[in-house]
Length: 149
Image 1 (cartoon, rainbow, N blue to C red):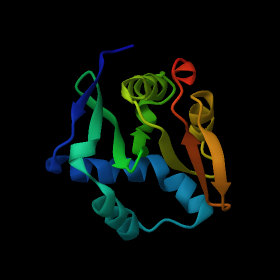
Image 2: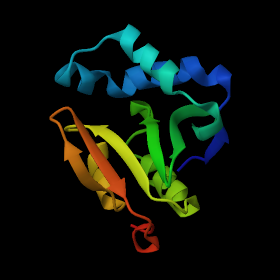
Image 3: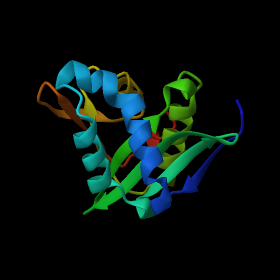
């Protein structure tokens, strides 16, 4: 695999994250609720926190993003997007494994129903807590045994 690295996000990364979300989630969102680019951008602006986000780089290219936002005793894993051009290379697995090893807190996340990402999360110890037909909420208790999945 080409050199994979994470770097801290900056406020200047906002437009890249908006564009990345559109490339990664548009098809699933169209299937579930319809696509609204203005609403999608507004949600990224509302939730983008450079202090909790890392940009995923492969070589010199932007391959994705991942956010770990503290919330009480848990971390919310958010905006974990891997660009389609980089999918299928183990990048998501590598990044998720790394952030789980770094973490000393339980994690929560929300994923779209039918998303292939749900299988990745399940393999790494996340379990479904709720499903409303559009979103699936998952939680991973702190367990060093499931970090090496």
